[in-house]
Length: 374
Image (cartoon, rainbow, N blue to C red; front, side, top):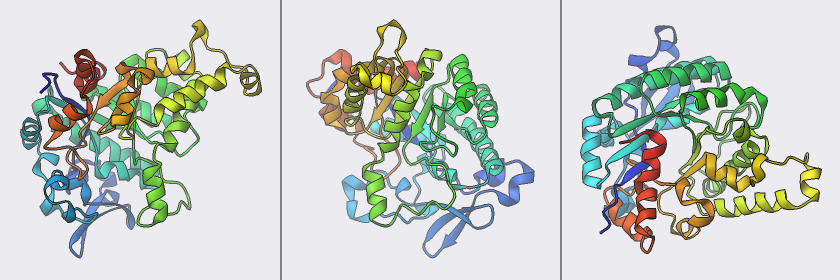
């Protein structure tokens, strides 16, 4: 067994049912997210009748190994693993799993992006971030929380990013599909500037798509499967948009991560960008942009971006092209697809044959460096 330190770059909390009633500003309390028991499962609503999240497979860590037939999308808070909402139980489960530290994201909170109201969403995020800071505080050396920020209004996003830094949170997550255009737009420039100034990494987590008018439901049918299997589609857009619009030239110390999309799709994207960039006619056709210092698009990816994986052995085979320093493992605790409680066994298998120094970086060292874990 390898002796590397295991640090999860992608773990989760499960928001308790009274979180927003307890933490949201009083003027928003009547519109705040709330749980409604519907039959045998718990459904989340906000702002009256906006349905946005269900308690289900987010709560079923370990079942894939012991009882996979019991995994389902419906569930209730009676079945939530205590480590999802109790920090002391959380670190006990980390010890069971052999994980030294983790970076935590929302569960239900990722689906709050479906709440249409911009002002309510900002209030929901402010409340969540206060709760998350309280969750992390008892074990701040082991649990690093990622704030949620609302990029509908970039001034709200920057204000909350600054507040999150003051609360001790390690970075912030933004949606894979923002409401107003891709991340190559000038409206986002103040966010990149502040994130770089504060040394707060920004991440884009799978499943975090902003509500858009008249958007059809994508789950529970064949389109849902298409979305799930091809979820990195949006990441291709985001990576190319940010690199070719010069975000990382203007902000060379900005760090942006792609979380829970696995990694084996990314080497071809880097190759495709470089090929298009090198061909003489294509840069002229698309604006003729040339990066300073002779850098290629893939160089900017390796310098400014990082990418997490859970069980992508194919991606590990292509690690040299991606850059070993960009790769971070995550266990997705306490979700049903999590590697908990067999994370070390699984990581040992995936990293078999990888040099020890690279194992240490991929299994935890890169995550520790980016998120300030000692």
